[in-house]
Length: 441
Image (cartoon, rainbow, N blue to C red; front, top):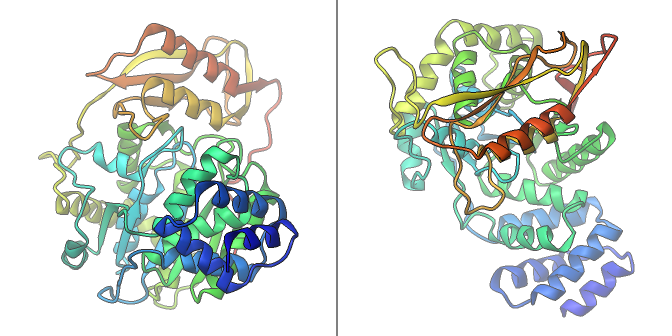
């Protein structure tokens, strides 16, 4: 078997055999296949696709290219959640303590943010003392004590995926449903999950820009999950405007605190409730409740103090500092440095999440390269969103930087220009999209 024949087979629109895919992934992992041949096959896959069997084999081989986590110490079915990313996505910090109130134990491995997509690890790291680099040998103890643990992804988890991803980024081979789906699912399977809930974001601030693309990706991941013996559910959520009222690390974690104490935004609560209901059911912890009764119970736990108590337990268990008043202590404080005002009167028709995300990166809330440092206090707060009426001169957004950081004035004005471009204002009220666009299983 040789790599040239494998490239030619996919170039000629043939299905690769399981043995060919295994040979490819092994060669990627051990470095025996040169980058130019890897890139050639990736481009052939982009152009000619993969069938369900090929995608599943690629996923399982990538999952098996490194260490696979054993979660047998968890009670019930090991579940995991993955989001395809967006702007203002602060769901995981709410979700973990929320499902823990139902007895669902979770080991969550998350990454850092890159570009305008925020990283869950960065958000937790905005809390003073919080340890996001937990040794895997400590996972069982932390889960036993609190029901959950969150940590950065280990380098030995699906190493083939990391190599392929870095090459895809520089060879124009990112836009491929089989490659995206296998990348996501390989990490979930290597992480030990037996049931997976996917938050597939859709819209201007997401990788999938329209509903048909989101459904295609969701369908591919569900097929991979099912063929790999993992129960998989995909929830398609709106990311045409930012989620909630803030984007930025500390700002989002402050909004998390509001949500777990019963003061969350409607769209955040809607997404959290939908995802939590599937995770609780897949873990077998729903006690036979109907969907609506379960969702009512989930919403109740966001406001009755039980989710808040678990949230504080999580923070303390990983070294995070909490004030005497029961609030997390952050590494900095957001400073409101500028407001962006509406240039006209009317109704907000659209808030392009991608441009808002780019503005937040200019302020320091995100990274353009993995080595960049971030300003934990930076971000954007939204006074109005789609459907709200504004008068000329009303504030659309507030721009924040950390109290300990300074942003050059020209970058503030560049961010302001992006925000003005993101907001579309018209004379008539628009039709509002629901936060949940669909559920597939």
